[in-house]
Every structure is written in C-alpha cells, then in structure tokens.
Length: 276
Figure 1: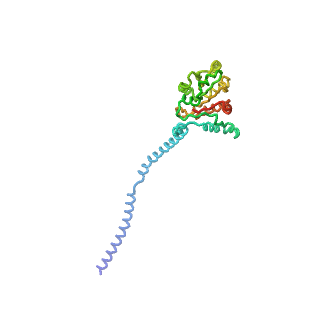
Figure 2: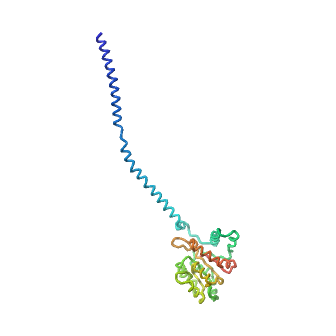
C-alpha cells in the first residue's frame, strides 16, 4: 500500500516539475528569441549613401535636356543631314509666298507670281560660275560692247557677304574678259564715293550684297532699267552650311530689293533671273 501511494506521489511530482520546467523554459526561449533578433540600425546606415547617390543622376538628366534644346536651335545640325539639292525657280516663288503671307492678301500674293519665261536655266551643281554665265548668256561679248550707259549695269550677281563677292569675282575671270566689274558691298568704300564712280564709269558687271545695292538705288546711283541679268548665288553654303536665303537678314534685304523695280522688270520680260 505504501509503495503504491509512493509511486503515485512520485508521478505527481514529476508532472508538476515538468509543467514548471515547461513554463520556465517558455520564458527562456522568448528571451533567447528577443536577444537573437538582428538590430536594423546598420541597415539604415547603409541606405544613406544610396539616397545621396540617387540625387546625382537627376542633375545629369536636366543638363542633358538643356544641351539637347540648345542643339535643336542650330541650323547646322539640320542642314548637315540634308543632301545638297540645286535651287529651282519654284524655291524662290515659295519663299516669296512664305515671306509675304502674313502681310498681304491672297490677291496680292498672286500678283507676286513670276512667269516661267523670266527665269534662266538654274545651276545643277555641276557648273563653275564662268561656265554657268556662258550658258545663260552666250552673246555676252556683243552685249557688253553695245553698253555705254553710265549709272547702270548689265549683269548683277547677288551674294551674302563681301568675302563671297571677292571669291565670285575671281572665279568669273574666264567669262568676264575685258568687262569692267564693280564691287558692290560695304566695308571697302562709302556709298557716296561709289555713286560718284558709277556716274563716271561704264560698268558691265556688278557683284555685291543686297544691302549695298539697295542703298545705291535709293540714292540714285544705280539705274536698274538697263539691267538684263540678275543672278543669285543660291546654292553656295557658308561655314554654318547656310545658303544665302537661309539667313533672315539677307532674305529680307533680297525681297526688299525685288520690290524696288526688279519684279516689274521681270514681268515685262526685260530682265532674266538666274540661280547659280
């Protein structure tokens, strides 16, 4: 009897000890779990330089967009990609319409249209200036011999700058022969002095800029009525790949010159236009 009761007491004691140990062990495991949890502080420190690094590419993107906008404004980038094409009379007609479209009515724009008969054969980019002038004016020698009127010119070549005018004069030696040529641009002589020279001399050829030619006409030093040929240095491009009519200032002066009697002479078919 005593052994039976002793066995029960011992089993009860084991059960109580197991329960207490399990409860105590649960607390120990929780403490162990809390102690083994990794501290997130180092991870936050490693993120800080990443945030600073992300700020730099944004500045680079803004700089790249700014440089792209500046490049779009340059006409050189656009013209460099385009293949050179010879100018045609239709190009001149279209430029006139675009220039006057905002200031003139439809009827006035139609009056600006020039007949095809007033245009000479355009340069196909295979000619030199001398060969082109010989083609459009095969009877030049006879024409210049019959010209004796002062303050006038038989053939006028319009270009964009004084430097380009000198180049054209040198390149037309084979055509001009004994013809008298006058430089019609600024920087080398005043307008008043040039007017006096035109009053004293007989000039056959004139090469210059539209601005100076306009001034000579305004001051009465140049009469356009005897003019037979007006040639534009149309296809030549400068260092920025701009043609004469691509420059806004030159384009404006050219159209102002055309309105000073050139268009009326073309319509009467006494003056021929050429695009070199």
